[in-house]
Image (cartoon, rainbow over all chains, first blue to last red; front, side):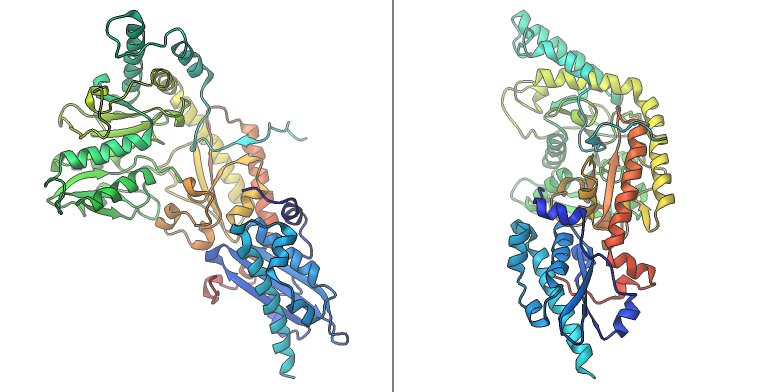
Length: 134
Length: 415
């Protein structure tokens, strides 16, 4: 399968790889929202973490880890880039179609962009849920 | 000090196909041009020359597998040989004519190549009953496993000699003996075996054997089916009818150049098979040791000893196969199920072995051959380790594993 140049670029130099702590630590931190989507048996698992500035309500940092094909890695890498500096509402507006367009994903790889959108929404929901309890 | 870089892209997919040996091409060459005759032309020297070449090749193929030249039927390759053997035998030995049910029972294994499974499925639609057994978790199939499912109406058993994805051998001589005791026809798809391992169809109790030219340094589009002529004399219903070539089993003008190439390829394999097996086995062991020493959660699939020397199939936990191939794009290998690499489905062969989904998603089949060098294997080993480490740095599953979280216990939302 031929990958687009942008997919290869993200795959070779993925942005914002990492995590803000162990699974346990992350669960306890209220400034961080986590989205863990996909399933190993489907061949894609994305973990997206956002760190939100309490004062501004903006996403100040984002990190990802991804088990998946090159397109899945590129989609989640791109998602972290786009999320940084956005408000939660702006983050919720990122659409998978924008990722498809930016990375020139072929039809068989559209599910990677859908998964990235799910990860974004899931991370934001996690942050909101953690902070609604207080 | 770094050894000289091997030439890239590097080919480590000899189980998919092999390059033609230049000596094979040289042998074929005259039969394209000055010796272009049809071996069916009985009344001039052009035909005689071609026939002589075909006769010689038939002898070369027969010698490699311990057969009589009369027992060799040239085909277009293993797929055709398998189809002719399985459909041809089933229809010949059917208990009832076309149009009926309960026409006879056929036994095979779920990790066979599709070129065996699909003809079996076709026969199922045509009134035969098929039992597909599971291999053991080391990939092997034993005589006892076949014995357990034989029925009074079993007419055909087809079990591959060595598996194409993991290289594991099955108990072919023993299964053949069992079939002979019970009066059942025994076919083996020996595509990956012949030319690499000593073969004697007589002693190994094989009735029908498929082989392919392009897996042993011969050209593509040529193969053969061994059809036993004595004890028992195996009969087949032909699939392709016409001029009655190949003793009526396979009509059509002989592919003389291909046949000559296959013959030469068989002769060359017979000469260097033992030396290659030893050499490549040592390289494979070196590669496996290097990888298993450097990485955790890796698994070499298949039986540790009962397998082909030039092939290894390794699963890497917490790494996805397609991204692994992307990192290793300069090394040609197979990932997942050999013939469906383009799909995202995990390998049905590895599934049959009970390899977990997470492991089956990232397995590499590395297969070496006549021109594989130690430098190449050293380089490939380094690159594989580097790629797996890179992807594990990216893998949330590997993090979880290191934190002691069992990923099989997480409720994943399948998508």
